[in-house]
Image (cartoon, rainbow, N blue to C red; front, side, top):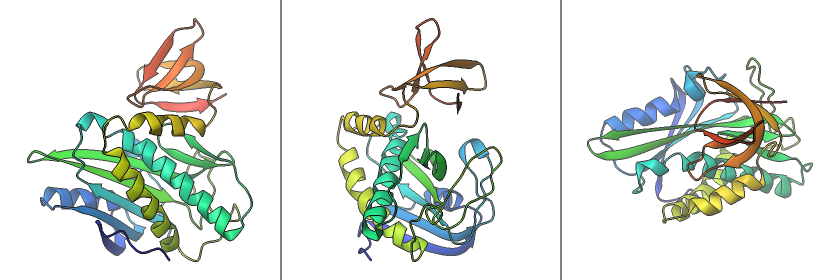
Length: 251
């Protein structure tokens, strides 16, 4: 197993309400440094916009608490960075374990898919406490079991033939790669390379989609993301519109 990155404090829980909630409590306490919170089980896990997410013992549930010295406007970039790291970690296990090759795609804004089915999700939250910007990256990976989530087609690493000894083995590989990418990301203008990499593996790029942002519902062609991470949709009339949030469905 890879050594734990020295710049990250690891906190382990058997059961907790939510690793993101624990990270927020740490931030409110004024704590300094980077922390990784891992729980075997969560009693109040959630996804984007507070949507429920089934937390199954045996899968990986974690949050990373950071204090990046960058503009608050760049924080959303970390969702794309994390998705890239997750993909790289999965590919490393496929190679190491000689598991079946898999089509791993990144779905806007925060999902990782294997063969079109969700295997991992990212929940990005941020807060400013006494002038300090804290960022929380919640990560859930279906390492062994498939959660039952309405209207979502999901899978697990195990179901795709990627057989891990435990969620911890994935955690160490993921964090080894994350620390490298995160260090690079803190430099100016680093999102250009992240954006290019993410688009290389984006799910259904240049395909028909429907997007509902709660205000309006539009259909068009998914043309990529802009420099702020917003999804770009080409409407029927040729107009290119950007949306910073919304539910995407594919036609």
